Image (tube, rainbow, N blue to C red; front, side, top):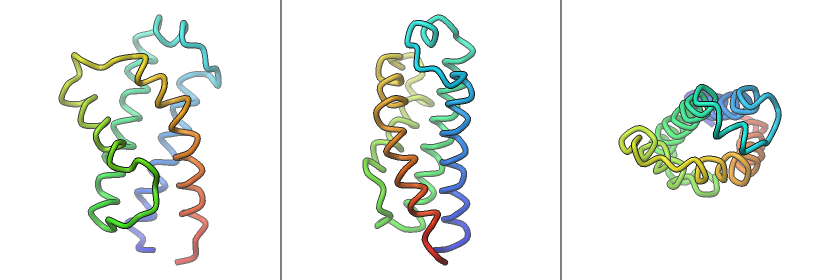
Amino acid sequence: MKDEARKFLFDIAEAIIHIDFHLNGERDFVKFTSNLTVQRAVERELEIIGEAMSRLLKLDEAVSITHSRQIVGLRNRVIHAYDAVDLTTIWGVVNKSLPLLAEEVEILLQQPD
């Protein structure tokens, strides 16, 4: 794996860790929806994940990450359609999609060069 690809995978893994940090390790939708600062922080980390994924796919279109194109699409939606961001969708991504993404990224990072 190219060093550049490994860097993007590391950026994704780090952003996932940061999301957990922003949420204080809790998965409480009410707290999430009542704290604009946390919402924006989570959205920013999702932007980073999506941008890193986009750059990774440009290096290697065959990278084995489930829903990689949807991850990039979410990034575009958060950035370009910011006024239509649905907190329920963001929450679903954080709770349902990120655990799988974290697992897949970790597997890829463990592969030898």
